[in-house]
Structure formats: C-alpha cells, structure tokens
Length: 115
Length: 113
Image (cartoon, rainbow over all chains, first blue to last red; front, side, top):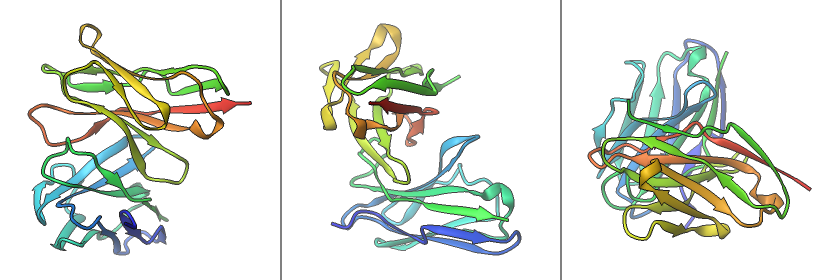
C-alpha cells in the first residue's frame, strides 16, 4: 500500500488566497484526521471523520477553515482566505476502525507558507 | 488541567548509549498511551502503545516503554541508540472518554558519533 498520500507537499501562497490541501487515506481505513503542526502550538487535531462523517471539528480554528470528505478515498482541507498565521505543516492521518485509540498512519504532510 | 508533558525539549546521546525519554500525563483515569516518532520531513510513525496489562511494552525499532501508574509516567527507552534514531519523539494520549489523540510538545533526539 502507498500509505496516506497528501498533496501538494509544499504550498506557498499570498495572504487572502484560497488554499486547498488534499488527502487520500489508506484503502479500507474508515477514520481520517487532519492535524496542524506549528512551533508555537505543536501538533493539534483540527477535525476527525469516521465513515466520511465529521465527528469532531472542535479543533478547526475559525470559519476560514473547512474540511470535506466526499467519499472514503478523498478528503480536503480548505482555508479561505488564508492568513500568514496559517503557515504550518498540515498532516492527514487515517486509521482502521472508529476512535482515536487505533493506530493512526500519517501522511508526509503539506508545508504551507502564507506570505 | 489535563495535559501531556515531555520535560526534555532536546536530548543528545552518543551512538551506542542507552536512551530514556520522559513522558508524564495528568488525567483522571489512565488514558491510552502512545509514542510516535517523526523523522525530519516525514509524517509520524507509531512506535508503541499501552492500553492495559503488562506495564512494559515492546515496540518497533528496538524501543520499549514502561507504564508507571504511581508516577503517571510512560517513559520510552532504548538500550543502544543508533544514528538513525535521530528524530523527534512524541508522547501522546487518548483520554478514556475522549476521541482525540493529544500530543506532548515533543523531544528532539540528537545522536553523536
């Protein structure tokens, strides 16, 4: 299996632009997680899907952030409009079963820079 | 307050030396406990986990961790470190009544030859 696939690996954009991050989970996994990693705040869970349904989005910073999972093999995280403080590495992870206690398999991350 | 604490931001050990990375948690009930490793430019990989039972847990890459309820600790150990172990190590928990993986701040391990 190719593992969790994220695209793009790097994104540089200007403040105010829309940014879309993409994730393909491991086939057969039915939980998907989006995390953000920054020096100041460490690793934070943004949103958690189970069977394509958002279960917990309490970590989404504000309305500028939205996430979708239209099917079991694809998820997006969108930031609109982007701001410099959104600069971070964004990770997608997937796991079998339901619940965060199952092993999570992380993608390589998308490094976002907002100028 | 509920928290996961990794008191050491950086640790440097010589290749071949033993390693212990500390992790303490503060939760009412013992949470599910994990150690993840992040190599530079990579995602995270699970090293080991503890849910219940034997308090000494074996993981991948020669790592082990010991759960000590009395100390609310879950320290990671390796008897002999290799240069390839240089990475950032994260202790993480899932509260028994929660559905979030909560990470500590991480410990950066440097290995000197």
